[in-house]
Amino acid sequence: MARFLTALPVYNEAAHVGGVLDEVLAVTSDVLVVDDGSSDGTSDLLAARRDGRVVRHAANAGYGAALATAFREALAGPWDGLVTIDCDGQHQPRLIPEFVAACSNGTADLVSGSRYLQRFPGDSEPPAARRRINAEITAEINERLGLTLTDAFCGFKAYSRRALESLAITETGYAMPLEVWVQAAAAGLRIVELPVPLLYLDLARSFGGALDDATTRLAYYRRVLDRAEAAAAVDAVDATQAAS
Image (cartoon, helix red, strand yellow):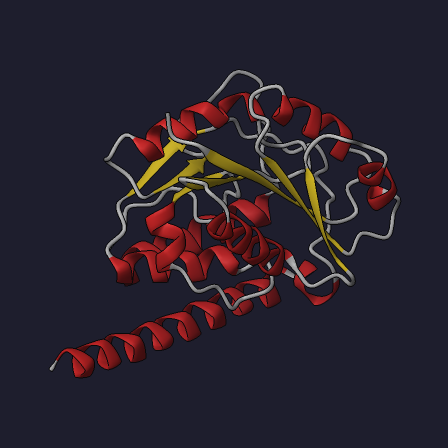
């Protein structure tokens, strides 16, 4: 049986972290919480628990930075892979075994949740601007990279050890998944999407600062895509020259 670490990136999730962690621990004991410099009492709640391991960033470094820490922790341990699940209550931890199974049966290196593959009873209606940007960026990624994604931004994922070893994440912010897609395509990783419910518990949830503006956020995503593609092209040239 494959053994996957499950990691939760957490920033100021005092309202959700206890319940989500309880649900995750109900299906796996191999749990890591990356507390990304929380200042709302989340850190105290985690410190009071005796289940699961916590790595804490001294200051908020960003969503991508929290996941990069999770990648390093998984690779440093005995794990066959890594599951990542957000801590805002929108993901369903009971699905973790399905993600592990899909990522360890020899057909996928990276399994990503999709909120748009199928409808589930009780699904939310996503905020219009978020759905539009997700659809636009997902279509652009597919065109640029030759992929067939339906949801570029779902944080519920499973990575094989091979996938983790192929990824070198530098994007510290919310656009980190875009860098993952570029690097995964360049490495020839096998990608599978699994349908997951579409749940928004806080429709007014903020990205923080300028990224709350949809136009600014879209431009940021495209900059990250451009930068990741340029880096992948350089890496390809370097690999060709090293092999010649």
